[in-house]
Length: 208
Image 1 (tube, rainbow, N blue to C red):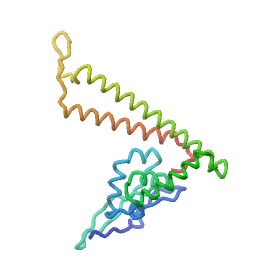
Image 2 (image 1 turned 90 degrees about the vertical axis):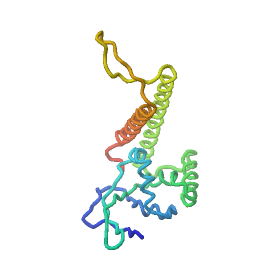
Image 3 (image 1 turned 120 degrees about the horizontal axis):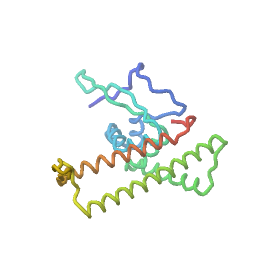
Image 4 (image 1 turned 120 degrees about the vertical axis):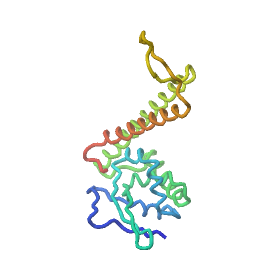
């Protein structure tokens, strides 16, 4: 069995004001049978996690048996990032924690939870502004997707492979694989823009 060890002391994470949780610790709390599967979940939702804040990581050594070892990437998550993953994990332990998060969110929306001071209120206001910006970007993404679908319905996607002597472009219809590749690339650009916008809207003094 693979033995998971901590990163060596000389591997230092960036200093932050907020306490973070190691990815495998979160996996244990969420009831993962194979702890390292949490890293697959992080990879699938990396853009959203980076929209919340910088995704801290470092290299850690694991023993693979018979004296061999290899280096892996270990993630350290903020409370907000860990909470996001709770909603995506799908385990019984995660669902139980998500119920509490949902109840706390309902109380916040009803005004039953208030900030303890002006700094905390500023953080809440900034989080609300980031949420509004994400909703705007999602609406833009939906509109972009609708326009793409309309374009597909009107005429087949084509690429320019040359020009006639009079300058008229010579067109070739894209294969289904090429269409899918273009759609994936466009979706990746939109996710990157979403993450970048989340980082841009964060104030310099906000916690990561």
